[in-house]
Image 1 (cartoon, rainbow, N blue to C red):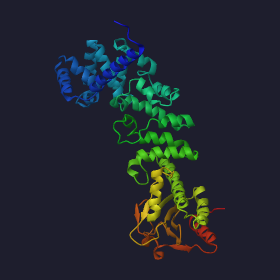
Image 2 (tube, rainbow, N blue to C red):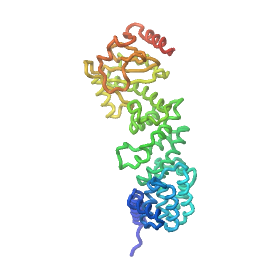
Image 3 (spheres, rainbow, N blue to C red):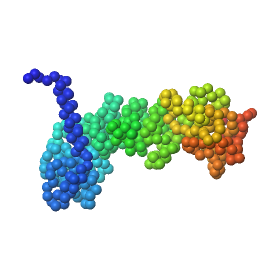
Image 4 (cartoon, rainbow, N blue to C red):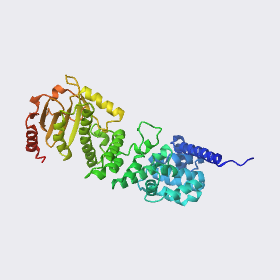
Length: 435
């Protein structure tokens, strides 16, 4: 019999590793029938089957804890498991430890110490992972987080896989989540281009792609992710490219906080404020890109220069666009072709007659809501107490309603020294002055 080549041996190794992972994936799934057997035997002071012990150790510890007197059941369960002295059971317990949440409770500490004491009973590859990635170290998962972000690989998730956290349930488990949170906390202290790029590799293209295991790790981590990506910019701003990359991930996966405020309810409001500040600027730039792409910007140029002064001084707290039907189609076309940088959403003008490229920019400056038209039209001002003021973030607007002068507190035609008059009115109402 000829000696197999290195390629053949490596292929066999990959095959066996895949089979082992499939078995682990099966074991960490909840199985009520085995949980019931274990609970019954522990309560009767009899010995459960090894299969039931293995399945509960790997995939049923949270369910065991949830039972009445769960903490005592778990302590007894560990005592029985240790008495077996089985490598298979110790490995199952390690998988269970990696799966459950790690909140420094006494229960997780008991599991950790049990596994440390039984480390020699673990399979060799898992014992090596424990040493290399600090799977049983404290602070929990800190070493794995540090190795993942300091590795030469552009894909830190590869380090998670090497640590044994590749399967979906484990990658979405407590240990991996703790490591990801450490990474988020570290990134929140400051960005450099390489670390941000590596961090963004943790995210799937869409959360709907359940075949992408990164969904398990990141889908429910918005508060941590927002802190990592936005906290360094509470008082400053990134480059345009960095901002575009961050907005792309946050809006694509976690949606626009202006349109889905409840989904961002658990995010620190200072961080939501950073998003809204960026999206205000994005709305303004989106309007310019659409107008420029359709040769409709000439009449808007003077107004652009005027309002840009307020945008750049951060006087505009909110901004939203409603495009005319032709401009709306142009915006959709630019998004589809990848030419439109902005990820912000926008509305459409419909129901009553309007020229196709006429659009409106709605802004909030202090106590004022302001509607400004791109073509023929007036700039209109509404005080906060005015119930007729335009709402932000609607997807559809009736232009006839927006153009009712009788509903506005003040309005101005774009003739003569209109810039001076508008700036002076804003100053009188808000105290904000562009010098």
